[in-house]
Length: 219
Length: 196
Image 1 (cartoon, each protein chain N blue to C red):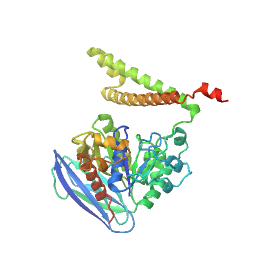
Image 2: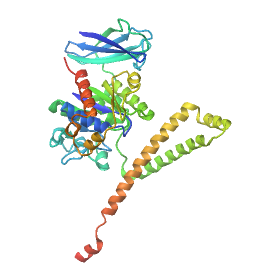
Image 3: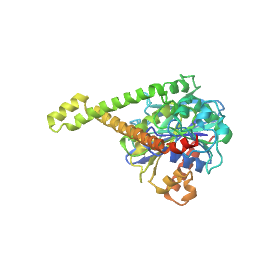
Image 4: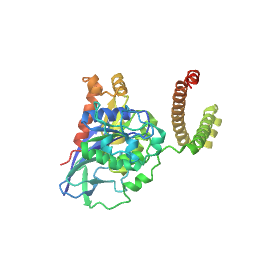
């Protein structure tokens, strides 16, 4: 199963949601933000190396942290040397080996996001309630539809209730309230389940994980 | 064979129709689902043609969810499976992906030029928006709106400038970080000179 976490706009919390969801689903988290990686860096080969043919997808998966992570390089030179369309195949290889992959897609709808969506079985759109974020999220959902990645749910980040997002997107909407714990967890490469197992946000992440499992289960 | 089950839920004046398509056959099928509601609903299917149908690819031996929303009151049947067909080799995903923008940063030689061009673009947009903002009288505001091509155009410009602002801040951020690193990377030249 490959789940793409998309949003269109930067800064809406895609990476954090992807990381937490990967933890909840026991999946590999793939940091596909080729130009602006923001999940914790680890040692060893990264996605830049994989997309440039210097490493295989499997050897780039780091299993040392609380979540298996295929990190992304942070250099411009590395980003320049990538073949973004090769991302589809990379994700398929990871999913074949680890069963589940959650992809943290970059902001903007470039070929890298497209390649992730093309490989994905389903997607999760992350937005805030700001207008610019919502219109980018609608565009992201359009691209996902074109590429046949079913929309599992819309995550309305930094909000206590989803407002009219459910109606606007025609999909389940889950609000994630602003949380100090989640920000702190992500910064330290920890999962929310580890530092705040009983928190409200943890419960919402679990709710999202259940939605994902329900909508992409095979017969 | 593909079968369709639906579930409707009424919420805040909108009926949400959830559709589950199950394909028992090993081969993938493309299913067309038609809304039976009046009005058929638009939020989405945005891709629905005039006949308000959803086209969904259902892989072999799999269940796929889709759905739509409509202001109509719930009624049965809410949606109907009109037909299924074998997936055609459309100008597939690869072509769609190839049509998207290249996310790779430009090479260093044209990098600074590209950055200059982006600054110039942003500056032009900011000036245009400032001109609209500066209109304080009704006739001036009307003229400014007309110059930009109407309210929707100003809204779009406003959104674009908000994005410009974000990008500019990101560039500034990066520049500051790099400058900081440049400072920290300065070796103690005096001590090194004594070593050689």
